[in-house]
Image (tube, rainbow, N blue to C red; front, side, top):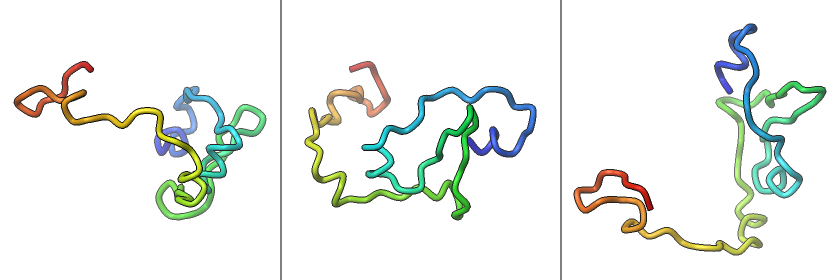
Length: 78
């Protein structure tokens, strides 16, 4: 996103807009308006997390390190 914002001829950035649930969990996330990604004016990306809202959503599956790391610690396919 930083490149998208800094370079006027960068091109299309991929990604879907944040739905309302994600906007509630991550206040400050970019908005999409008329095909443009509009960032907030906070430092960095300015995205926070509302842990109280996030806690309302059950985690479907907790990943274990054995699920995505090989014996030597390098990443591997789950």
